[in-house]
Image (cartoon, rainbow, N blue to C red; front, side, top):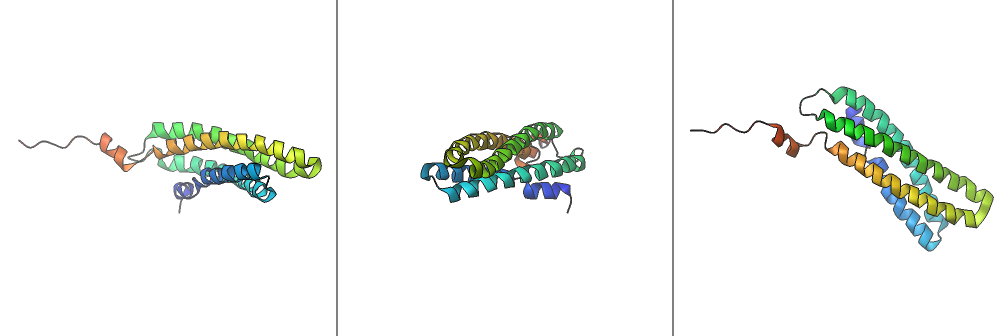
Length: 157
């Protein structure tokens, strides 16, 4: 097991966590449900942690694969740059989730739902950025892409 394998294992967790968290937060706001809000905020925090771990394993995976055959080095750089922005946005959303969790105890009901709406906006923005980074990561190596890089087959005469 190496860094590239670990990166592939965990890299979708922040994306899925944010999708589920967004759904939970929408449900929490529509139904004014504290349990859904709590689950959504904790999932955003988990996504933030997962995003940091994913970025770290991605750095190590890059060093292992950047010169391997069949790897698109330009795609690695594009993925890395978009991943850094996505991780930053996810960390900001996780910070807001911590703020919602702590702040609702001090400032009560009005704060809870207003801050939760702001958190949902941050989660949706982060989700878009994470999805872009994930898409760009998928362009690094794909079998269907490899066909375009191979020389055409020799024609028999």
